[in-house]
Length: 549
Image (cartoon, rainbow, N blue to C red; front, side):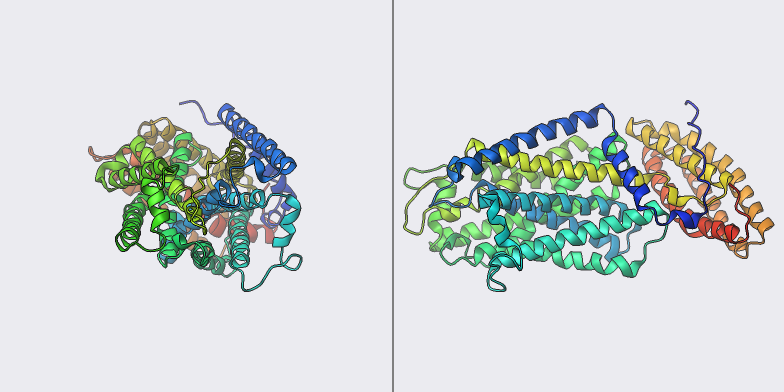
């Protein structure tokens, strides 16, 4: 293995001076967001091209009017609102990462939560853009702004939808921004400043999709939507599609080596989908039975969607393709060995994602208008302009999500200026350990984490002897009152390292799994130890004029 790159010089400032540097963080954010390898630039170029195609389609729609779409007086909500409805669910599903991390205090899930929260931000952005283009002329958008337009508060369900969507966006932006800022600046997050918003996001996530469902089920003139089961169906399908997307995102990050979150978040989400996918299919079956067996007033819409009506059958392929994909994907998720076959897992996630998109889009919004209130059957087919615009909006959401990940992952997995203790030798050794951990990440990416494990263990033995001894000597010389407590923390780490070495000596040890586990534990222990214990000593040394630069 090649020698690790030499660590950069430690900053020549005391730890307290690093706490509030927003301009420094802004410069670093721009650097992270714009720097990457060839794959990153190809990905962003493709997304940008698709987004520009969407912009061109939107300008064409603004100039020529909504006549360029497939919508009409009979079907006034089409692909745009279908896309909006689906991504509200994707945004709401991000909360499923929050529940185990904070309600059940699963520390390993904390960083993975940020990936879900950032997905919520990107998904809400897609929702807002979908509504904006559906309005038609952009100058009409001000009518939806409280205090300016005719908001019809609190009667209009659309009013409630605007409030909960924008509120959910603000909550997630604050949570992600605050936690990343604390990690970058090297301080412990103050729980009372963000935990209330975390718990509020759980309630708010349910509310955004419930209100969206009420927006449809509250329209008495559309009997296809007049069911009390609509809101539960929305939530069940959201907790299938959203986790499926997050699983794919986590697996891509693992594959690229950006940051291995470990398998626990993926295992949790797979277990969740195993339940919610069946609930979603059960609710769909219950709805079909109730409508078709009793012959209710909205049986015509369901028959049109399932079998066609009066020679019109435009939605039949959409409906049955969604059913097939959802059933096959649910069967795959029930297979116990799915987690061991990552390609098959990705296939199941993609199938269920597309299946739910059809079910909540073309299979829900459009049949609500067919037949019309005058019992006319006027079919709807999305125009090419609509497809271009929808693709452009989706590309913008993926650009936002990609940039957020590019900014967050280095903060979560690497050394930041805020972690500086203010003692050059100590900071250099800390950064050296992060370099070694990132080399382990690279080895995991190429499937050689097990082979790299011996090198990392050997380095850790040297690190423990050199770093801990030198740090404890500095504390003793400085007369640090918490020196003995700090030594106990070091001793605890040594004991844990001994357990790892003992597991490594077992012939049946899964070295790849142990490598991923070791990386997660080391990074988490190191970050918390530096922020809480080492920074406290740095502050003490600086107050005594003993800080060495």
